[in-house]
Image 1 (spheres, rainbow, N blue to C red):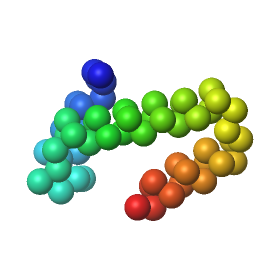
Image 2: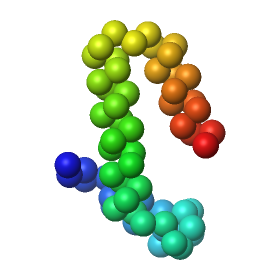
Image 3: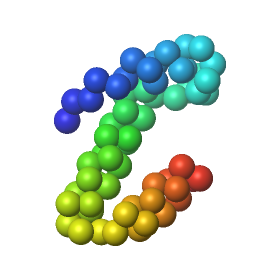
Length: 61
């Protein structure tokens, strides 16, 4: 699965916004997988507030 969002992540590493050991490709795949999972749950009828809870928890951790 390809995602064109690696550029901003690479830039964030290069500018010191993310730790230098961060793998931008791996992080992009992680975020894409999470987004597809949320989209699948939304399409299956999971309530918006539940999706928000899941997203908030992911951002905290």
